[in-house]
Amino acid sequence: QVQLVESGGGLVQAGGSLRLSCVASGRNFRINAMGWYWYRQTPGKSRELVAAVTSDGTTSIADSVKGRFTISRDNAKNTVYLQTNSLKLEDTGVYYCNARIGLLSTWGQGTQVTVSS
Image (cartoon, rainbow, N blue to C red; front, side, top):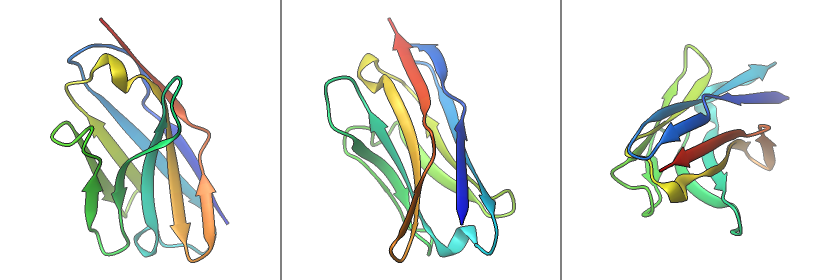
């Protein structure tokens, strides 16, 4: 079983940057055997997939954040990152990390990102 802990959120001015981290721990897993996803829950909207990196390293970014956000994976540190740049007010929300392999899906507790004007 894998446990996920997100960190790196906070209060930032519009145009600023944050690097979100998702650290995985547990037994009998390999980070590069799993698919990794960053979602966000913004006020008044449903949870949105922001970025993904598959087990083979293929990345994808939602159109709403393309050119501003990047996802990366550090296998040695069992950590997946979401680099967020040029943040906008509408990026405010709770960001969640999700890991999947087969039918198994694990979520972290989320980290709050608040963008101020």
